[in-house]
Image 1 (cartoon, one colour):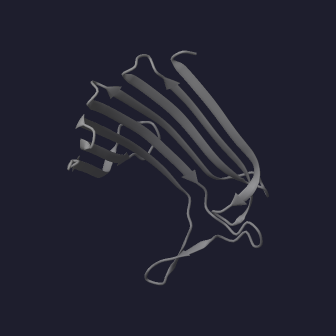
Image 2 (cartoon, one colour):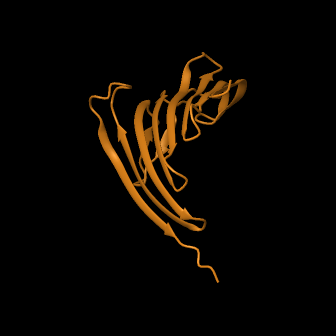
Image 3 (cartoon, rainbow, N blue to C red):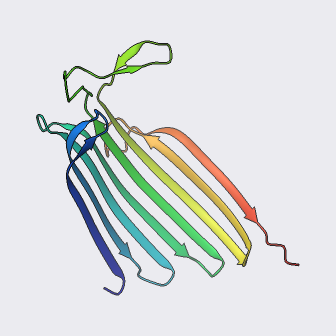
Length: 177
């Protein structure tokens, strides 16, 4: 289509489950959709799934899902704006020695003690904003902001907790001789 493009990539089969260092059935899917309604506006969406299932009983070791939306707007030749939003949800089962004993995998702590590699769910939201100004070739000003938040339940957006913020500024100037 003139203003749309899309792609789907699927990889599945048997590969290493690096979480437990054993064989696993894997699924990797990447979906993307791009929309270019005008010369100035670009919108890209993507969805990524990565999953590992144990060969012994079919249980899920790890599954990650990442939807992402990126919007870019070229306000003028010199001014560019970008906004990116991403939601990363990861769910991992208790890890075990899948190839021999099926005993829990233990992780060594800095103090020398051992703890079980326990199941967890992590839901992270990331938002980034970028402003770019390029008045002439070789002279550029960038300003950006990013924020990462987490929440206990996926896609509820009611109990978000901020984990990090970042801000940057960059100025480059080309000296001509």
